[in-house]
Image 1 (cartoon, rainbow, N blue to C red):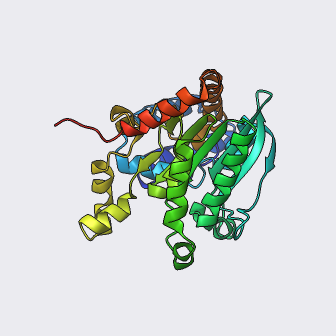
Image 2 (cartoon, rainbow, N blue to C red):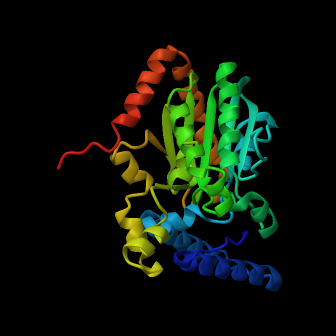
Length: 319
C-alpha cells in the first residue's frame, strides 16, 4: 500500500493504513497468518474513509483541491488527449509557463486546450509561478483561442489557479485589462468552449479562461471570487477564520450547481482525484465528448446567444 500524503483531517486514515502495512510485513517476516486481523482493519479503513470523505466541510474540500498529488492540466492532457503540440508566447512580451496552450486530438478530432499549470516541486513551481499567470499568460490564451476560432476548432479550458499573479510587474503590464479583454472576447468566440475547474478556481485568474458554453467543477475543486484566506483577511483580519470564510463563500461544486453558476459536477473517487486520476480523466472525457458533439450541431449565432444568456442569468436572485 502506497502511503498517501495526509491532510490534517485524514490522519486517522493514514495511521490505520500504516498499521495495516506493519501487520502485513510482520506476518510476512514471521510467517504467521494474520489475514483475519488485516481483513478487519481493512473493513474499518473503508468505514473511516466513508465517514470522513462523506462529510467534508467546504474548507476540507479546499485543502483537497490544493493537494500536491492532485492531477494538473498536463496530466489530464496526457490521459485524455493525443498528439499534443504546445504553443508558446503571446507575441507581445513573453511566454508565461503558468498557462499551457496547445492543439491536441481527442477521439480523432482536433481540440485547442488551454489550462493553468502548477509545479510538482519548488523548482518547477517557481518556473510555473505556482500556477498564477501574468498578463502574457492570458494574452497567449486569447491568441490561441482566436486561432481555434479561425480554424473552427473547439476550445477546452482546464482551470487550476489560486488567482492571477498580483505583482507590480504584472500590474504594470495590464493584468486587469488582459483578464477583462479575455472575458469579453470569450463571450463572443465563434467556436464551442468547455471549461473545467480541476483544482483551484481563484477569482479573475480563473475567470480569465473561464467563459464557456459549459462550465464544470470537479467534486473536490472550488470556484470563488476570492480565496478563503483572502476573504478571512479582509472580513475578520485573521487567517484562522479561513474555514468560516470557505463556508460563507459557497465555493463548493454542490453550492455552485445549486446556484446555477455551473452546469455539472465531475465525480471524483473517495478522497480526491489523486486517488484514481485515470477514472477522473475518463469521467471528464465522457462529458467532453458528449458536449462537443451536441455543441457542434448548434449554429454559431445561437451558440453565442445561449452563452450570453447563460452568464447574464448568473447573480439574479429573489429574496
